[in-house]
Amino acid sequence: MNIGEFKKENGRLMGSVFTRTIDLPRIGLRPVQSQSEKAPIYEIVALNIARRWVQIGALWEAVSKKTGEVFLAGQIDDPSLPEPLPVALFPNEAGGFTVAWRRENLGGGFGGGFGSGGFGTSQRDYAPRTQDGFGDSTAGADGSLTGGQTYEDMDEKIPF
Image (cartoon, rainbow, N blue to C red; front, side):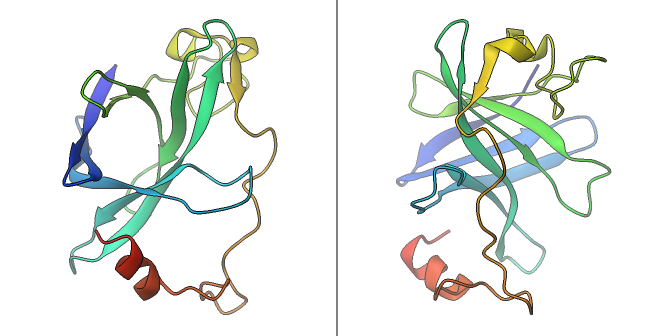
């Protein structure tokens, strides 16, 4: 089921995701700069009520073993949502992405809506780009961003 779309706008990937109970009319994909193979390709960001861009998800590159098709897989999550929303983004002809969702079939075992039958592939046919974990944490003991970069620095380098 398609639940949204991303298009290039002024050099950025901007889009929306909408379901019966979720309406995210303006969200963006911010590229992740990392040397780690386990890092996501994009952070999914949205404007909060104070008009600040906040991260609400992440996307990793995935490849279908069956077809070789490359797509992005991840989830949207926020304390205001009742549960995470698993998504897959498939490239479209316009240089953007179509956002798809499918309820996890019982017994799929993979989680996040990508189990048996998810997105036309079985668990055996889905090969995530990384096999384990999410890479090292960027949060310090006090909750601050580590690695010498602040959110303000990131906003200057990658404005949203």
